Length: 317
Figure 1 (cartoon, rainbow, N blue to C red):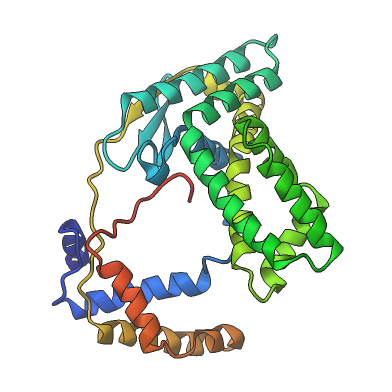
Figure 2: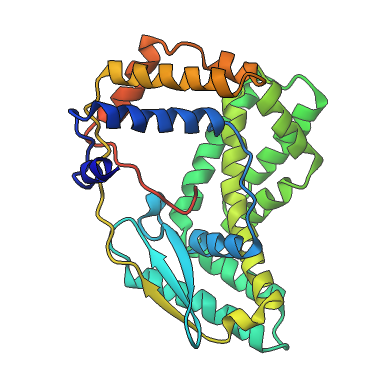
């Protein structure tokens, strides 16, 4: 483990550490199998964890976690200290924005005359103004995939209804707040259930999966605004006193890994054997893993060998 940490600190895994590289790839493969990217299952979160995630989302106004990667909280003697971190240096604007959101929530928690719905709209409007470029980017990508599935033709009535709802959202491109609220409401419409079915049953589900993803992203601003306001109403004591601080600058670290193809293949073999031994009752998972082809290994390695590949943790994840 010390050797692995030392290698990570240099920004790359040492190619001479074959055992370390194998262990690293075994972990990556297991995560890919047990938590595939196409899976939408989530680890249960408490309302407090969701609140911190929502603060992160609202404050992350630029793509790639350039503004905020996460918000944490620390109980100190007289208040709650909220910590903010980013990929790189935390900007004063991000600190001020988080402090403004917390101040609005504090007012709502302390003043029974304030209307929660008004504060929610205020926070939502500010968040969408600050994240205008992100909203526009998600809208553009959503439009691409909606047009793609529309050109393929709708075969059943449910498809027609779903496409009508999606086009109705795209037509609101002139009003980003209304657009995001429509995306939020879509998730409670019957047509959204057919969207989830398309992802699991359609022979070519890629565009449907992207549509669901971008609808979820657009819906996150109204959802996050609503939930942080609910936290202020249900737990007002959390906002009696607070401080805002930032974690020191996180330097970017390249994940370029000059590992040999054989090491990755060895890791695949080890994982496959382990699954056979421990998960015999889940044969479909083991069968699904199969033997890694040379082509798939080459693609995996090529992406991570590129000197410009830099993983960026961000609030969207």
